[in-house]
Image (cartoon, rainbow, N blue to C red):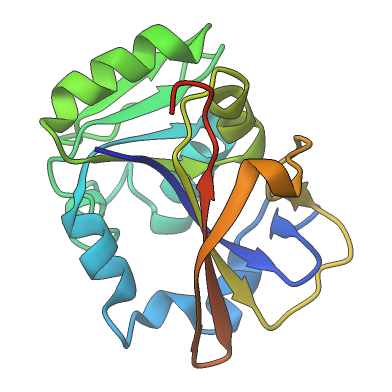
Length: 190
């Protein structure tokens, strides 16, 4: 089992624009999954986590309160349990296995690992949430789909300092206009 951060980023290192929108990503074609990369990745996911900004964007973008079946169908999340880290009361998507969490990520990670049943844990985003997993030495791998776009500002891919000694490049592959980079993250317990 791995805990993975799989995300798309602009070439200047942003995962969302200055309005916390991912619309830029769909403009460059990431949503097409023509090579099956995302489908294969998600097949290995047993649990996932996201921050409240990501969750709310997904709800709004997909109109999931009006069309909750899109959680399973359009977004492809099926019945995979999803932990949403938040300090607010958020709407619940009917039929989705969404669990709200707050505080330290480590005990929640243990719950996620148990629910994942030996499959991987996907940290959907945002970058600050993923940074909290980094802070607790709970991140194993970063997979970046680098998009052919520069945003100039927005939410950084990972607002933490990780030096070259903490990251080992294990894969680099072009796919359409994207470059997919995979890094193993050094952990103190390895």
